[in-house]
Image (tube, rainbow, N blue to C red):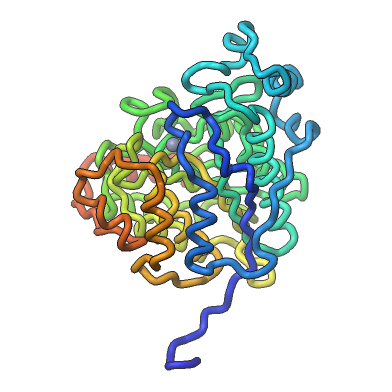
Length: 390
Ligand SMILES: [Zn+2]
């Protein structure tokens, strides 16, 4: 204990990465045509936040693995688009690809298949005694035969499936701003998996259907908590804590797969919540502290997800890596980190009050608000009526 400070014991952890993410995907006009995973990786490097052996090179998912959820026709179509550089007309209709939402880009099959392989690898890291972070994953909207909401392959489904193959009961937690519809759909008939999604209501946000309080699934293994526009730190924390306590006392699970999309953060251009980085990290820490442990390692896989503001996303996922490994990164950004963020071609919100701070600190000001009646009503109704909580 030098200087009287307790030494934190580093949690054994893996960060799944591929250099291929440096070539931005999705073309140039898409909300995802921004640096995300590579910027996160570089920011962690700027904090000297990796130890040797912690970064794993992502493998590509095999056809066999993709077939755990996706149809052979869809996989063949994705490969055909990459090989020919063209999206056939009938694919647009059948598979919802080659449009603005899910556009063609070089590496059309290989890049999503690598992100997916990385999330399966993260599940295997858990099985081998590590917590794991697959920031390129979290593509929770993809369906068996269709791309959906910028998502081509549903890596959360495949990572969970990998854990289920070992007989684990899995709790999927989705804190992305959008409802985790594809994952809920995948496990609607699988009692070994419970899904919990906390998101912007479908009355005002994508996917514009499902994800309601009353959507509990035919087995009752889906928990949905939609929250109103503008939900801020204090309300979000209140709502999460109440439901989380209930989940811990009523749901049996061996491992958690967390989808950690950052579009709930205040500066996000697509999200409509006002959550600070430190509130986000408080939730991740809370989950890490309360999941089952094996040989003292939390049984936790964290995936990426949405997040359309590169600077706030990278700062946040830096913090996620800190939580997972037990490292405390100083709030003031080191010079190398400042330079890195300043080099990103991004000025969409330069007139906003938070902008300057993005280059000064990895944390934000807090966004406080009283817990509104509608949030209290939603949480109380969920706790009172959900079949899992009876
Ligand atoms: Zn999202």
